[in-house]
Image (cartoon, rainbow, N blue to C red; front, top):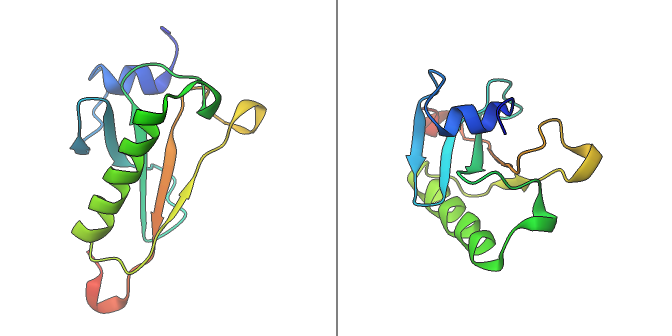
Length: 106
């Protein structure tokens, strides 16, 4: 989709810095953070929302989330996904939210 901001980010058409990249996903910091750590996990392929994702990609989201939590030293985290009309951007993305204790702040 030519006008999809996440497709542009995936293609490198913005100055967005990736925190991590896998074969299927890019992970970057949300520009409007709602937690001390607020990352977006975005499929490289344009997928509308969870209703169109395959199980192996959902498992990869779980795996990369666990990896990010360990890397950031988090004792817990939240994953949020909005589907359909609830999504601000109609390109699947999962919000990874984590709060850190002061001694672990980055």
